[in-house]
Image (cartoon, rainbow, N blue to C red; front, side, top):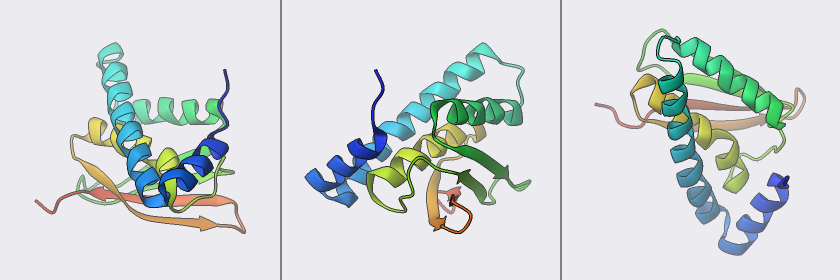
Amino acid sequence: MAIDAQALCDQLDLMVGPKVAEVMINQHEFRLGKEDVAEMRAERPQASVRELVDLLISADSASGIGVTKVAIAENPRGPIDLQISNPCMKRTAGAGKALLFSYWCGALTQLLGTELKVNYVAYDESNDVLKCQLIPSSSD
């Protein structure tokens, strides 16, 4: 069964407001990203971070999310740039934003061993690219 993600996010935003909808989807997708990466790591214990990220990118493309690119800085405390070309949603707030970026936030948190949060989200209409930056959630 296919789910219309855009309609689901629109409905959640209308029912509970975009801030609450974003928190709800964030909690679900963040946990799901962490769980998926833990399973991937168990199945492929020798795989590099880049190999696992590439598998996640392939899954995004196959699921219709868009064409995802992930740039992980050499410095483990540095920002991670994530962009989705031709995204299935073009939202910078609400449930749609969380649906596209919270999964990645959880997945990369699990892969890198540092809890991350979404710091910045922007949509570049001229190039049809949705971008975000993930940063460590604390300044330890």
